[in-house]
Length: 366
Ligand code: FAD
Ligand code: UDP
Image 1 (cartoon, rainbow, N blue to C red):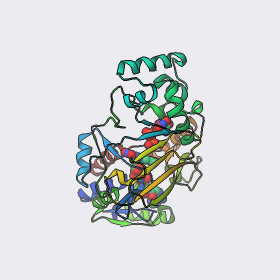
Image 2: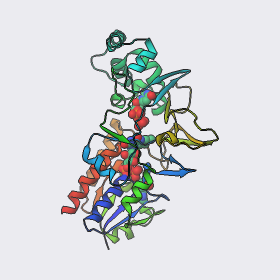
Image 3: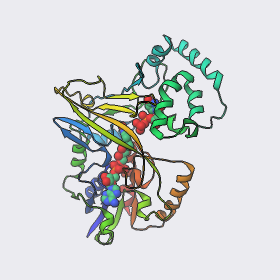
Image 4: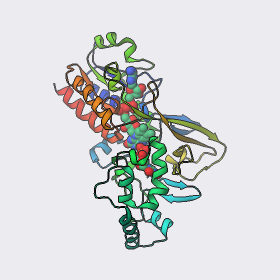
């Protein structure tokens, strides 16, 4: 008999299992995949750690969380500074003085602010009703048309006028020459990859891979006092209110006999006509100096049941369905729902760790 059956060896499940075990609880972790680490899984290929489910950069402003992850891995000094390519033009991201200078030739923050405010004045909406209006309010027509519209429409498979504005609220706009994509105090990539970090958390804990909870749910439930479920909440309830929708991705990975393909870990392709949104060159996450390289093109994809769920579509329709599942979940006494899929929400890694730590603390104090 286990205290906890943890469904999912992703970040949430692994932090939960580590902390519960530390508190003397007996855990069994299962995952339907053939590896641990969930979506932060990295696979070593010829000395390069490939981010198999999309590029992952750890960032946080929370010192406790930063110190927490540093127990399991040493983090390097990687700072995410993506480059955006629009046709043959290259721009720095996030939108900053380098971007404004390349676009308009402006040199000072004052010139840049003046330029943007002139552009905004033509289209300004007191209450932006969608992503297009929000972007025009924030940065004006030039940036919207070259760096936001095409990328966003292919990423989400919808017109920018049909998308909610919150999607781009987290893109910083800065009047300094600072290409750091994140505003957070701490940032880096675990040396040796995320998989090693998760393996360290799971050391000494029983883990069963290639094991789908739903294939033997009754038996699994009988094996533990409490189930910690980090899969899709709608699947848990057999889609009784319908399936929650996601946006999916397809990754196309190539090994190339060149040392340096694009000179940066992340290059975004912001025009609509290029079918992928970005190319990741994995070695640059770790300052790897090997003679060859591995790149991944990331293609957005319509999601259907059975596909890998990446980005939840948190529109009104889906959120209404989600709230019905939440009502069911609230009535459970022996099931804890955690992580991005059970909460139907995009979480950064630092959010997931914080939530897992709070959840395990509360659970183990009962
Ligand atoms: P997951 O990693 O999805 O783990 C859930 C696990 O449960 C999976 O391993 C799954 O196989 C397993 N499972 C599900 N159902 C079952 C079942 N029935 N039986 C057994 N096992 C099951 N965050 C950042 O902080 N920085 C980034 O740069 C970043 N980049 C991202 C890029 C992309 C493209 C995406 C989509 C997300 C990104 N994130 C990033 C977010 C990050 O991926 C998540 O915060 C993190 O993976 C969530 O961990 P989790 O444990 O909640 O979920
Ligand atoms: N975005 C954009 N142009 C870019 C990068 C991002 O318009 O070059 C928009 C796009 O709508 C995207 C959102 O900003 O969905 C959030 O992007 P971010 O890179 O933060 O998210 P990720 O896709 O990496 O999770």
